[in-house]
Image (cartoon, rainbow, N blue to C red; front, side, top):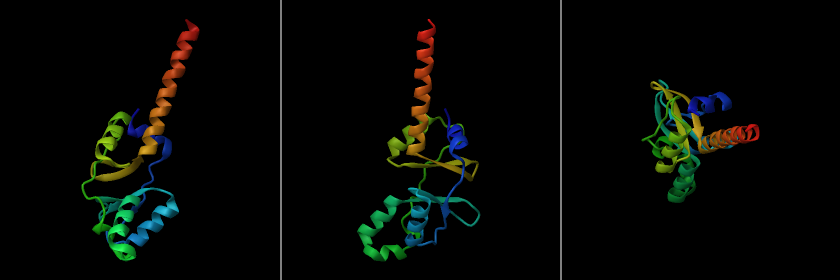
Length: 143
């Protein structure tokens, strides 16, 4: 199974913020959408980084309530691992495990066309394994 299959099932809507948005704006976007991270896009739609709930918590711990007035660009992750539509679920899971992050932007060239979370990847992995189990049951029952 690939990232393309995940996006086909969940959709490819991408929530983003601008680098000059404040952490307060970021917090509202995350809460309203009930998501854990967003991509940070420049004026031309270029991927500049990823900002997550963890970033907000770290900023609040370091700066207190004044962190909510900081720009997203001050705390976002700038070095972002990305995947393509052909990336397998196992490859995406390995990237997330090794990098210790929970969200991967999906790229087509230099454009963000989706985002997959660890929940999406785990769900896809479980669905694939359930399919294999059912195939084996059918094989054994038919034999």
